Image (cartoon, rainbow, N blue to C red):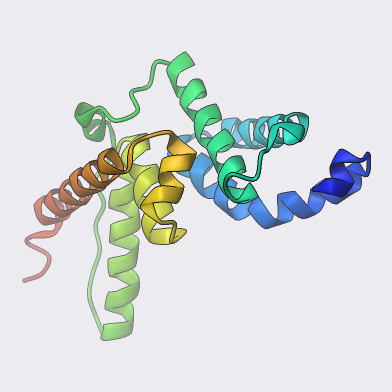
Length: 177
């Protein structure tokens, strides 16, 4: 980071390499359009580069960039008037289907079902589930990224999990037979 701040901009690629998975997860979970995802990823890293001197080492650099990614996506959704956590937003998505043969296949299909159902969640819930369960971030790190209190994150994660459970039960209850 010091090299970037002292003028060696090529070393910023190391920062990108170390944070691109987190940024991609946030952007993909919040933004559905591929072109918009690419544009926002570039915008996120441009903002991070331009504001790198404001980073105060109060959190990990990846958390700081994750926060930029989250807020950039939120602003994008607000401009498009897409609700972040509206419960009604879940009805806008399509329903899936699957089959079961053996333990290995069942595990893969179950994973696909869960991923599919996660993608039906409103953007905020989808992002929180991904940050917590896929990226393995703790509530305090998610709080730093999203500016939400830890209690709110716990509550939203609880709601998101309940929505997932109900959606899976509703859409797959007859397939277990």
